[in-house]
Amino acid sequence: MYSQVLKGAAYTDVARELEAHAGEELAHAIRIAKQIDYLGGMPGVTPKPVKTSNDPVEMLRADLENERETVGRYRERIRQAEAMGEFALSETLRAIIVQEQEHEIDLAAALDIDVPLPKEPSERKTGENK
Ligand SMILES: [Fe+2]
Ligand SMILES: [Fe+2]
Image (cartoon, rainbow, N blue to C red; front, side):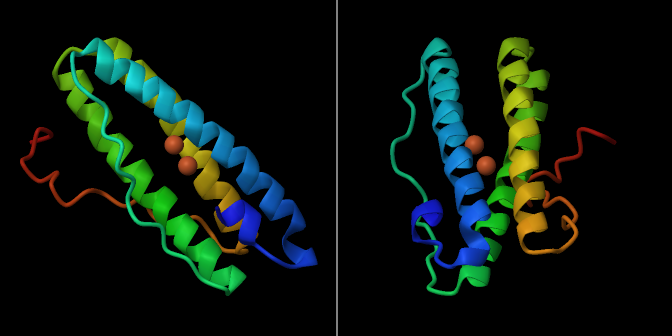
């Protein structure tokens, strides 16, 4: 959605980049759905609401925030997959987190800021690293 509504000559390259991200996100969803099906689950189909704005900078900030949150969630899921001995799942998640981190870097670059520190999910305080 962001790739199509981002307006302005200054954002042409960024919009093209976001369109590439969208294709990668679809590929992620398919790979995750395959893993969930393998584990006997039913993939969820309800997406989180998407924050929109007419201001390109605000929109890119929202997208950066989405990617940061996503990276944090994948970190958590990788730890869970490893703890369960689900190494194929872990490999799948690791390949995806590499791309999510690239999305984060691309958006930070588009906003001309440094990549903010990773966001850790608040649920991770049960301390498997103690
Ligand atoms: Fe993704
Ligand atoms: Fe992403």
